[in-house]
Image 1 (cartoon, rainbow, N blue to C red):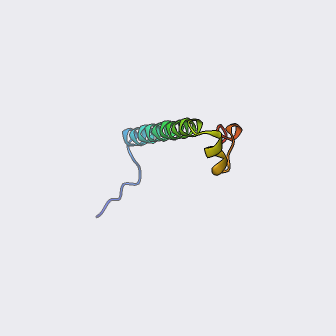
Image 2 (tube, one colour; image 1 turned 120 degrees about the horizontal axis):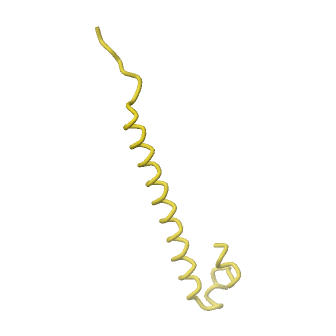
Image 3 (cartoon, rainbow, N blue to C red; image 1 turned 90 degrees about the vertical axis):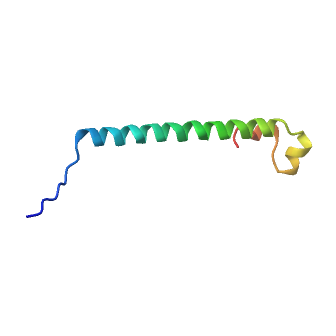
Length: 63
C-alpha cells in the first residue's frame, strides 16, 4: 500500500520563510541601491542635459 505524505515538517516551513524573508530583504536593498545610483547619475548632469531628456532638477527625486 502506498502512503502519500501531505504535511511538511515545521523545519521545512521555517527554512522556506527565512529564505523568503532574506530574498525580499535583498530585493529591497537592491532596488534602493539602483534608485540611489540613478539619482546620483542624474544629479551629475547639467541643466541642459536634463532638459534634453525632458527632466529638471526637481524631477530627479521622483524618478
